[in-house]
View 1 (cartoon, rainbow, N blue to C red):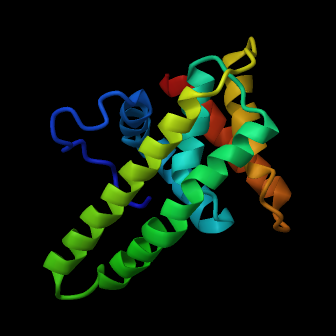
View 2 (view 1 turned 60 degrees about the horizontal axis):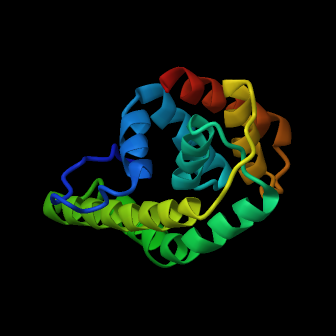
View 3 (view 1 turned 90 degrees about the horizontal axis):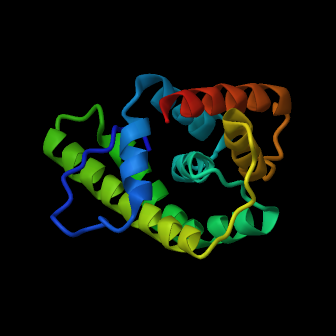
Length: 173
């Protein structure tokens, strides 16, 4: 996710998925957007899963390792088959003279991300969660549970980025 979400959905679409509304609200904040993009571009983390982690924490719940595995599996096909290829094409078109092509690719990428968020919301709907008393700790717990999958050499920098995002998400909600 590179661009800000725009809520131009038709009436009735995704309205049963407050995850989408949460994603729109928090991702529109420049600090959160920048932090998410660093985690996406530097570490390969999925912004929609980062936002879902924040949403779940906002609902006063913490993910289990099994729940994260299920969420990653649910979103992987959409992300790998559609979101990432569309993002790559959009980035290639960004500096071209064909701004109409760039806009069409951006809209297609955002539509694929919406479908991914819908799939995540449906999966979250079937979860129960463990309450954790301190707000920022819930955010960090969910983000860390997801990021455990990252096996790169920059674990300390990743932990610092996750902590920064957890603070921003906690302050935003």
